[in-house]
Length: 465
Image (cartoon, rainbow, N blue to C red; front, side, top):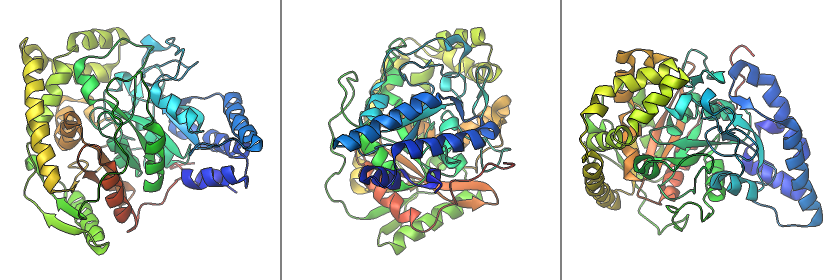
């Protein structure tokens, strides 16, 4: 049995029932990692002995008759920008190669409490700053479906790993698409949860500015919507270290099964393949009994995009730019240089003004989503980018325009789910589902209906392996 092919849901059931041991699953997962990671560089650090010890602890708990968590023995990867005790929180930086975490971040602690076996640490671009995954410390991560395509970023290692069967679930983070875009690019599913849903904090690092505090979230990537649901329930457990965490129920009141399809929010240009994927997803929802209405536009999304950029650039830009210069990462420097004039033009009241306007936009979107329970949108205006597209100013501008919705949805605090739906040749394509704050359950219900209509084969063997 190749256990690495199974979903987290299947693995947890088999381990909890005693059909298979957590050690057998862990050994199989390590074997898969060794077999394919050399072609991908998705996992940049792992310690097989520790993995097996964690698996043995799950087996010992089962033999004692202890209650097992929902992820009992499931191999899960952790992104290198989250504290995991005993490992450096590198964030893709040589500057942080020795920044060893003394304690788990809340989301990692929650995964452990749920019984997950932490398989390895996944790659990210320097500073977790791009939709492409390469850095001077760990090197470049490849997309297992097509090495000429980006694996996405900043959770590119997470997307690449889970698509290739390295772990059943991957932890990612998302401040501007960093879960949703790798899921899209690698042909898996990925959830950006509501702000306040999953607790997060890194004791190894200084307190973040107000912009990142309000926009950055952790979320799961997986090969089935069922596994996204399972991972969310584990990750969302309370932790007193995160003051933004909200004790909201994972299931909300019943809502009409009604979907609003918006092809070009904010006037976003989309390629024909993206439009075809959206209409196909809408047809799948309709066949599953959902009422689908096509709408011309959403509440302001370009202004939300501008607010995200203001909160990012206006709160610590100079410090990040100086750190990028010390790090010497050319792609990070190039991206920051592209936004230099905008950052330097912001006045001293830019952040408070952006926060005030953010409240207005959040209210407008909240009212809209009260009338439209589920919103079906593009993930990107384009198919996944050629790897390294953002190494020129024109490429940066193109990427930011195509990924308008990934940036713009972040300051609104709403959940957004990438659902992979098919391939164009070897290139994945998918859609994005949005619902009101703390209504991930609606995103997942619609996602399951879309998933039932077919998804790309996964896990996949990397091209050339």
